[in-house]
Length: 183
Image (tube, rainbow, N blue to C red; front, top):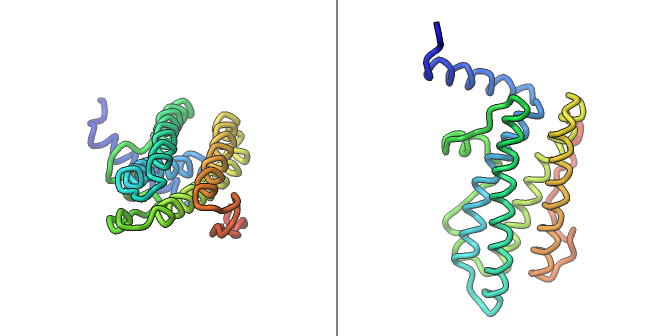
């Protein structure tokens, strides 16, 4: 007898809960998928609401960031499927697993504040990318590890470019997690 969609989804949710409490590479990458979704909204918020003389340059740069973020979202989702994982695919899951915060008030920030907020979003994303790299290495999942290493480089480039927009060097004023002993 085949299982119903409800039974299959309940089993998926149960396994997901287990994987997130004892982190696996797949669970960590699923946080990243959810982060992509919230980051997409935040990047659009900046592109749509930024004001000031730098608006044209910021909007152009953000169109590139949005396209790259969406490409990563699609590629990581496919990679998770290749790895026999189930990527998040509902807004409820994105809300639960994303660790990037959002707020409607941000649209009223200055251009510098908006861009700086997005810099911190990429820093937050990198915390999960770094953990995913370690977990994928421990689990002998080279395809996940390799993609996460590439994503880390792409995120670092985004941080550097956004930091330059607000007059900072790549690492200036970043809030990073020094807790490496969780893995």
